[in-house]
Image 1 (tube, rainbow, N blue to C red):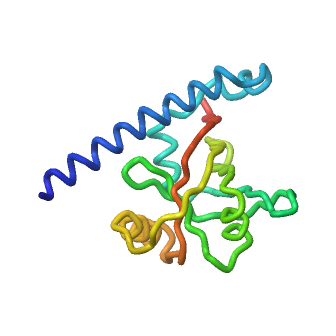
Image 2: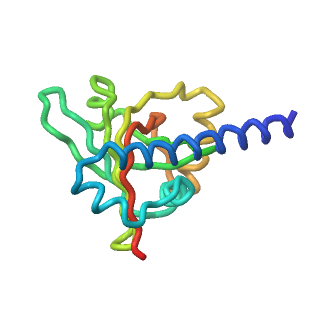
Image 3: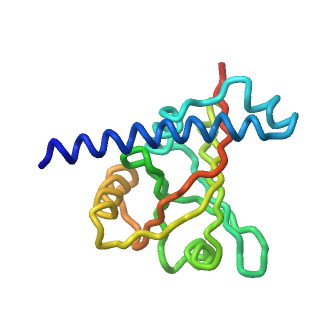
Length: 164
């Protein structure tokens, strides 16, 4: 049973990596000339983006308030089995915003070494699920705390860059 679970996790992770690599490539193909010029020079691989998500880099999330104004705040962000998750406390503006509009952009920045801008949607998890348990463990390991709500971050566009 454990071996099947590990194999399943590896298959999900491989599929997620392949999917994220495709999203990075497709985003660049459909980008403006300026964006292509900046982000096509030395893009990160999906594995590098996942490594960033699990390291202590500056991570910000932009959501949309009900009145249409943007809201930007630091966020808890991890990758588990190749899938990204946001930690969100229910008392925050981010939580209220995402409940009304799941659109979110996440920026990961490691000084001037590398950055990733990920656009997508948030889908809240059942906090009693096995996935939520694994994500909470990853948040605890990374940050030393957990949040009272979690959302899977479903990437639709990605622009990444690293120094040469």
